[in-house]
Length: 77
Image 1 (cartoon, rainbow, N blue to C red):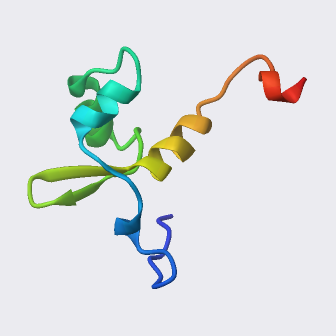
Image 2: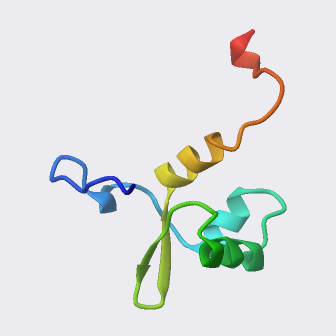
């Protein structure tokens, strides 16, 4: 379920990222895999404006944190 846009928290207030920005942020991620995730709807949430693909940093962070598996983080110790 997508978050509702409210006047208190406009979507465009967040840090906007292109697919190229995203692959630079995540080591080893390639543009082709990111495009495949969009096609399969398995990757991070994104917005499409015409042919322009935009990711919000906050959405990427939430998606990435949801991928956590195994072990404890240093903060848990």
